[in-house]
Length: 91
Image (tube, rainbow, N blue to C red; front, side):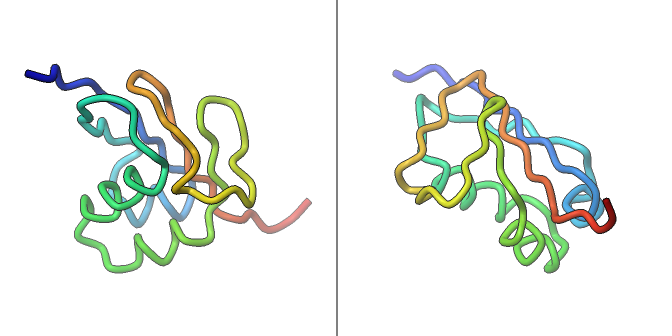
């Protein structure tokens, strides 16, 4: 039987407002792809805006930007932190 582990997901600015929380602890049974984690995260909050906001966010896995990499090819291990940062205005 697999032991459940956690990936911490943090939201910033508009993502935090749409999620209604600053972070979620997403249970996983082992490493997942960022795409799988995104599916799980999009199912969490009741606010319809959330999926739209996350779609335009920059994403960090640990302290590494994901950039334009395919989320289906980015591995996220239990214990890591994933952060969603919406675009910011200003300089």
